[in-house]
Image (spheres, rainbow, N blue to C red):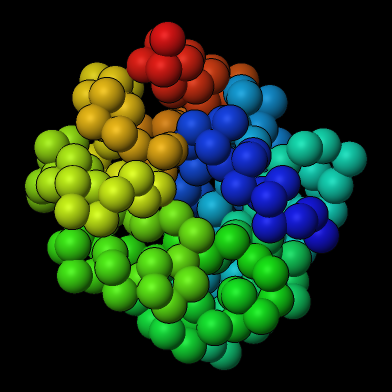
Amino acid sequence: MATEQRIMESIVDSGVVAVMRDIPEDDVVDVARAIYEGGVTALELTADAKRCSELIADVDRALADTDAVVGAGTVRDAATARNVIEAGAEFVLAPNISEEVLEVCNRERVVAVPGVMTPTEADRAMAAGADILKLFPASTVGPGHIGAIQGPLGDVPIMPTGGVSTDNVADYFDAGATAVGAGSALVDYEAIENDDMDAVRESAAAFVRAVEDARN
């Protein structure tokens, strides 16, 4: 397992976490490999999927010889956090704040990314041990909300997720985002259905290019 600092650097350097939700179990490893080959090093498998822990372990093994980091999303309780970390998750995300989940992550030295919307929630999450704040759903408030949170709280690391696309990702980085989370805007579900991993790879690469352009 990588160190917390290494995981944080991977997420920040990549600039994007690929949210792999509702992907057929038989395709998960191939999709993860294609997304990684497209340039995304941080991969999130959501804990509300059946056999999530087993799938995390499968992806972790498949990409063991790479610089990819594999995490779990939608982790809302301590038991789930312990299960996904034991399976190999190196970062844990949630749509909410759970002090119990943050405690597990801090104890196991796993990067914790709870979901927040308001300055009060952001302050509470950082005080409880969050490493990055997941602004979710970002589409509800838009890029300007990042500055609204960072204004009173300082340069807290914020990762907007939900509605981030190649069309607006530059706006989020311009507003101060540390990284972004992206699901359907990055993961080509039609290509997965057609078993076209080349298209999956290119969709991921296109998002990575948009992130790189946004940062330059």
